[in-house]
Length: 586
Image (cartoon, rainbow, N blue to C red; front, side, top):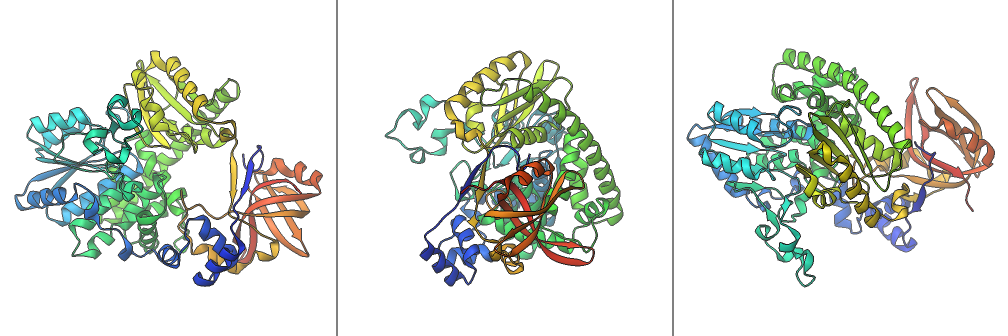
């Protein structure tokens, strides 16, 4: 809960002369210079690239191993009039990646079909259900997006049927047993080994997964990888791949990958297309959600579009979402968007019921370093978002499992310092399957192994996590006085957008503030004026009403906040969006 639980306040500090240097060469305030330094931007060229993320700065797609082979095979499919099936995934990253490739292949004149697995019927990944769909359709080439890197057996079966497979994915590949890796030999670094020496890889025609080769592009989402394929195919027609940036932006924002490098460029340029409303499906989602046509914030991806797209894969079928994202018919888009909006409302109700029950279980049980919960009553489509909420609330890695017919399927979310994919690999003896990356993963196991899994994962957490790792921390970009906070600063901060994982909205801290007119308003929001050296600013702490007694008793307080412009009743004024409060510390 914001502002309430004990937290570690960490303030970034840099040599004052260096901050002045960055401020001067970048022509920004000292405050923003500190933020840029915190983002690892220390040279004029780095700062210029970051503040101006144009499509021309995207990396060369052919630097991804497998790209040349994949593009040649796709062009061959076009030349010989083959049917190609795109195999996607049911989450927002997977369906947007599917839509990107469907539009790319269609632009080449290729006969294209697609398959989105059902969460309950097929489960995650390229499995027998997807292969059957390709065989029944008569496809001679399957291209996976956002999945496939661990589908060893299915790829082998496809090859036996004479169907070529191109794997495009961004998830962690299956590592060879530790006895064959560099882990037991300190004289051999991981980078010295070839992918074949490190991983068990599918015998596909081509594999495009930046995590296989430790590429700088390993930060890409599944949609980001699909976007790079479009960039490679249409390298001489940039308008064709640039028009897909809105889809890639949604997938990138949805998958919690760092919003830096190519990802930042993708999201920045994709947001412009979302704002313009070129794509009927995205325009219809906004209309169905009740978003005014003149309203636009970069957070629209996270809070409006992504939850609705994800709702279909969570509690229904996501196949029609691809249709929504690719249709040119505004009437069809409107109908599908209304259906999606209704699904999202239903998803919210189901999610809240599961979350309340799960949070109660955590509070009434002993959790040693991790949270592992399971129930036969929980809908498998919401366990991932419930795991995210539990991790946020309790600051512990969370595993939430839905049990059905003796099989437990679920999702995991982590905290900094705990590699959840690696931890799952250490429990592989009790797992049927698993996949994901450092901060999020999916897993399946026999329900009889749940208690064993809980004990194994707890032992790993106790050995890896230090006590302070379980205390949430507030990372403050710069200590400021209220006199430093201005509309001009808010405008400067806007240059850092889009925000997201790896490029969070800057958080500022001010000390020894006087509290004036503190009160609770609306649904448990803390409203107050903060005063320092004769300057006072209106402040709001959403869902922080329980802090009223703290600020009333404290006399002076320290505050962590994001400065913002509040537009209300036809006016615009400066306001502090509070993130944490505490009695002033000298």
